[in-house]
Image 1 (cartoon, rainbow, N blue to C red):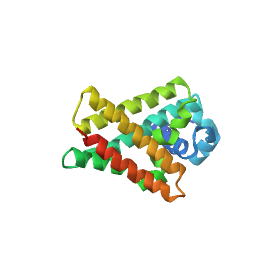
Image 2: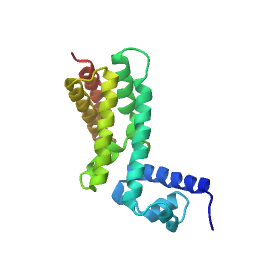
Image 3: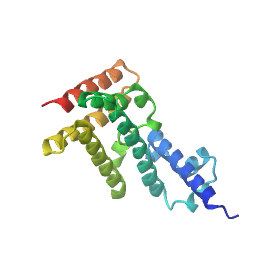
Image 4: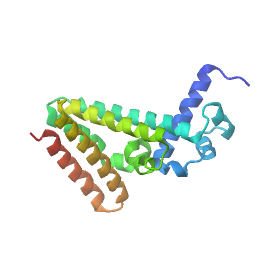
Length: 194
């Protein structure tokens, strides 16, 4: 049976959206093509009409997930006020209990960075591009473009992702929220330090 281009696009988007959530929630190794397709309410064989492999859908899913994250962070960074207000809003969006508790809807860097170490070069390239996008967003939010500003933005990205990772690792402990609060406080200091 032939499907319309609109139907094919909807199916593709459905697979990518489910993959983006599943990879972030379960990890790459714990997601199978058959499980992914079942979660999406589709047949296993239908996968291959859109993707050649699990790695192919992973790359698209990562890009989609990261785009969603940067969209939310960009919205937060557009908060009215000065640099401290914008940085505080951005850090508050990222370093939140809600973000910690919903990895399937959160940042793929925090959810999958440890797995990227062992991933194919194309996957590591997506992570490198995402880090650069985060650095660019933070540099714009901080209002500078020199090398010192880049260094501060890179340190902030590292602080944010690392804090989220550690907060999730200790989610059953009061330490988890303490990590988020400490990272937010230190991130605000770093971003506005002269």
